[in-house]
Image 1: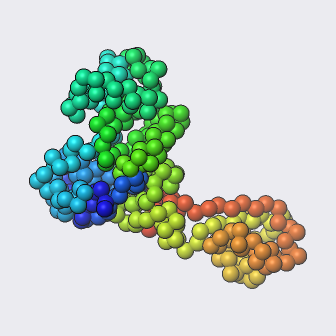
Image 2: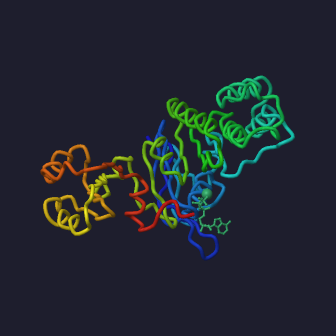
Image 3: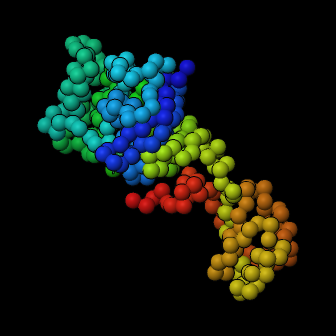
Length: 313
Ligand SMILES: Nc1ncnc2c1ncn2[C@@H]1O[C@H](COP(=O)(O)OP(=O)(O)OP(=O)(O)O)[C@@H](O)[C@H]1O
Ligand SMILES: [Mg+2]
């Protein structure tokens, strides 16, 4: 059974359609990545899933039950990590967490115990009694994430939780997510870092202009590309005419792109193509002076589907 299912969700700000018919679902223990450039509609979608925004169309099911008009079915089981950090600088890390725990209805020993467990989990136990004002951006982020975990939600919505975070905090966050998923938490994770989506998420939905333009595992998304690997081959002393002759002749099967003193071959799998490429070069192979393989990534998938780069922001 899926934890959460979005069916054809839509939302507009005035005339502007920010989310336009998005459907997907996430099961227990699954980390689902919502990948898209600025303005794709990720935060708006998260807002609807968190029942902070009323969908203009479509519906949301939680554990198979329609949430329309019944956000209370979800709230006790939901953790939200908002895109903007909202904490109190004059309070300590521990006090901040206790404040949020109180909002979730925790009190007394249970609250104290959960705050301690969460501090340990986000790796901030030894800094717990310092004021937040002295924390780094990454440490604040970890407290912000911790605040969403106090009541042990079954569904966690994380909106770009690693933006502006130092590498050490980032690694804490990655490990935390893996651990939560292992315990069965369903996690929806928005990002515009494709490396992060590829690394963390079992399935990835690619959003653009309010729509889900592709969805699947990393391997399934890469299948959408006509070629998977690019092999750049430098050839010493090669003139353009000579490269053109090679490209049109023995190497034509590899759809070569002609560069300055080099050819870039487009293949499905670099490793498996190497013998054929070497045979196609024949004795000329001795002139190969440089070779580099570039693996296709989610960036290439986004470019292939939209004609634009994911990084334009
Ligand atoms: N409060 C608002 N009022 C009007 N338009 C909005 C509002 N919030 C978002 N939008 C617009 O809706 C679209 C989707 O925005 P949204 O914030 O959901 O995208 P996003 O994918 O989260 O972007 P980012 O990566 O920048 O966080 C954008 O075109 C944005 O300008
Ligand atoms: Mg956003």
